[in-house]
Amino acid sequence: MKDEIKLIKEEAKKQKLKDSRLYNAMQDITQWMDRYYLDGVAGLVPGGIGDMVSAVFAVVHVYFSAFRLRSIPLTLAILNNTLRDIFLGMLPFFVGDVIDFFHKANKRNMALIDGFLNNNQEIIHEVNRKATQSALVLVALVAAIIGVVYALIWLTQTLGTALFS
Image (tube, one colour):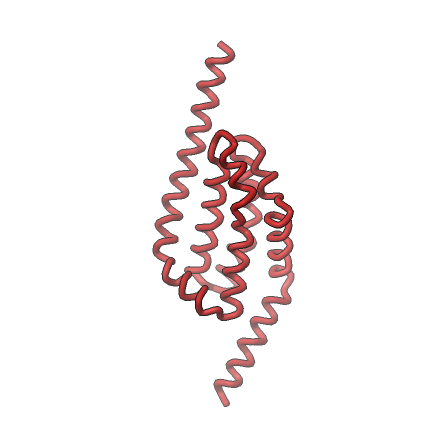
C-alpha cells in the first residue's frame, strides 16, 4: 500500500514537471536550436561568439537537471554535451560551422532529461556510469575552448598585422 502511494506521488511529480513552463520552454528551445538549425546559424557569427550565445540557451537544461531533477550526474552529462557543442562549433576554417549544423546538443540534452523523467534505466545507468568521465571531459573541454579562443585571437592579430602592415 505504501509503495503504491509512493509510486502515485512520483508519477504526479513527474507529470507536474512535464507540464511545467520550464519543461515546455526546454522543448521549444530544443526545437528552435536543433530542428530549425538556429544553433548552426548562430555558429556562423565569427570568433566563437555565436557558439557562446547559442550555448546560453542550454542554461535551461542545466537548471532543470540541477534544480528540478536534482541529479548531479545528469547535470554533468548536459554540461558535457553543451561544452562539446561550443568546442566543435569554434573549430576554425568553417569546419566548426559545418559540424554545428549536425551536432545536436540540445536534442541530446532533452533526451537525457526525458530518460530521467521516464525512469529509462538505460539512460540513467549510462549517465551514472559516465559521471566521472563527464567531469574530466568538462575540464578538458573548458581548457580546449580557452585554447581555441586564444588561438583565434593570435591568428587574428597575426593575419591582421601581416595584411595591414
